Length: 290
Image (cartoon, rainbow, N blue to C red; front, side, top):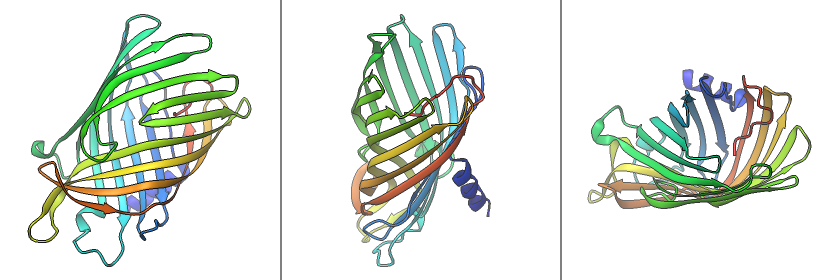
């Protein structure tokens, strides 16, 4: 019952951010895939609590949270889907930022996650590190270059991290991997943006799946590619809400044994929707969540 209460709350709340440096931040995200072309429906929510701490030129941001997935499959599956119908992937992470100068900074992120219980043998480690160079403070042009070990493409693998972000009048453009986004400032309080993103999650399952008495899997990964259109409206310095609609062009559930892929389930393409309300204790107006 508590899960359904939480989902109802997330529909109403969506995303909440508390504070800035030295103040706890809480982020809640909810997404719904009503039904894909393969007949799979899915809802998910993320909960993250973090506490930024500034130590001069260094900023540390420890965080803990949960990525929850609730999926319903079609009836003709040829394996037991129970281990991947409801997934609770708990994670703990740390972000460290060091500003060399006003123009140069270095970020490093590390995350540990568990979906089958707090078992060190079933711990998944991901992370990234990158340099940021800001060319112009008045009309910022920022370049990020680095590397990441993550599951944006399904498999846990070393991937590039690259981003070029700049503004032109009312437009803000972000080009790179794993996301491309273009935003247009409709007014002082509203913004419309569109983006294409790669997203993945990798975890150990609480139960081994037997596919055909030969292939077994104890790990799984969600791999998605999404095109989205988002409308954000800021009521004041503290309150804002967003509406988002999109389409999943790729939506796969991949299974692994000892990191070797043994089965790739295409869950089908389809629409995805999300909505949210954001409350911010800080006085920084129009803070965004790119």
